[in-house]
Structures are given as C-alpha cells and as structure tokens.
Image (cartoon, rainbow, N blue to C red):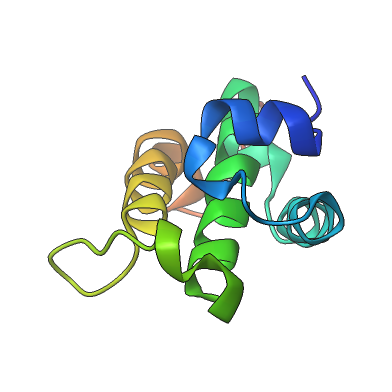
Length: 100
C-alpha cells in the first residue's frame, strides 16, 4: 500500500482539515526518511506515523497534536516502538538479515 492523502486522512481523521498537498508533502518526506529494510512489512505504517508526527508538530497540525509522556507526539512514540520491534537483533550487531 502506498499512502495517498485520502487513505492517510481515512486512517487519521484528525488531519482532515489539513490540505491534501501538505499531507502528500509530509508523506513524501517521511518516505525518504524511513528505511524499508528496517521496517519490512511495517514500512507503510512507519511512513504514515512519521508523516503524522511531522504534520502534528507543524503549526497547521495543532488540532491533531497528541502528546505522549515524553513530550513527543503519540505518532512518534508509536513509530519508535515499531522501530524497536522491527529493527532490533541483527541490525544492532552490524549484520543485516540474510548476511549469514
């Protein structure tokens, strides 16, 4: 699945007030900053979470801003948790899956 502004807003309706072009720009930026090798099947979800975080911390996303205990957005907290689940193990020791 590749995110569109419509599918993103369907998943996170709190971003409906934000114009599609801004959502698409955040999705494109998040895709560049997310490594598919780390997230595997969860890549699209990680991209969506990072885009949601980027939008929430922008002035236009103030209504969607939900902060977690560590003052990050809840989207970024969920993305970090997902990264810990998907990126541990061989990546930590310098090996990529399939290196051995």
